[in-house]
Amino acid sequence: NAIIYIIMKFYRSAKCLFGNIHKNNFMSNNLKCLLSTDAPFFPGAKTTWTQTLKFIEKNTYQPIPVYRVMDRQGNIISKDEDPKLSDKVIIKMYKEMTLLNVLDKILYESQRQGRISFYMTNYGEEATHIGSAAALNNNDIVYGQYREAGVLLWRGFTLQELIDQCYGNKDDTGKGKQMPIHYGSKKLNFVTISSPLGTQIPQAVGSAFALKGMHKVVICYFGDGAASEGDAHAAFNFAATLECPTIFFCRNNGYAISTPVDEQYRGDGIAARGPSYGMHTLRVDGNDVFAVYNATKKAKEYAVNENKPVLIEALTYRVGDHSTSDDSS
Image (spheres, rainbow, N blue to C red):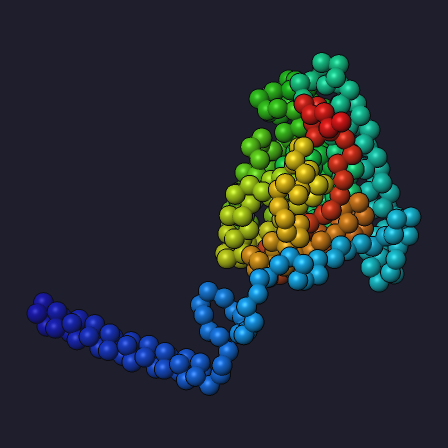
């Protein structure tokens, strides 16, 4: 035992000695490298020097441009940006957006007639649902907020299932335990919606962290109001630093219920936050279904291949009240 103790003692001393020599050589080489250049070297940021002291204001750089494929008349501007979808897919896009609009009218009136307790329409934001859903497959995980019914329709959720949930009847998979429009489908990888604003954002990142290297992506939908929640900032940082294959899809319609964006933030929208957290970022016309499709497809390719997050800001309009509990007039 004494011999073993002496050998272990010698081994630890030698390991410590050679470890320190290696560490000192590493630090010495870095020091030589630093002394050979005048570039700043701080662990907190990668930057350059300046001898001019001035504030960095939002007007000192150009706003992030909005990507679009079609002009206001629906004509494709550049053939290079044509997604070249089949007629079958394009017709399905049109049908699903039209169906969603009709469904909204019926269920909105159902609430006004006292048949259901609550409803939220998707008027004006249909292209954000359908364009993004078409670029994904059913193996990708979806965390919705409460305006993503079109994503479920695209994946095969039936009208009957949507209506059963809103009515909370015996055929509702949640058996009436959720508010209307709080959809969910295990078979379609659509995580059940929850009411507290923004909670799905860090949850989506946690799921993406677990799926790293599995060639899947997690897409998380939210609005500009949810982006003002602390959970959003924590999730952005979490996804960037741990390199999680997440698509953050923000539907920026300009209002958080009745709070306009100029009372929420003063920067260049939600997209400007992406680079500051170290994320690849895209800003698209949320009313251009082809632009949304291209952006989501590109985001998925990057997220899956690099195991890193992407932020998409879809600029759009909410053509209607926030919900049946809101009067925006």
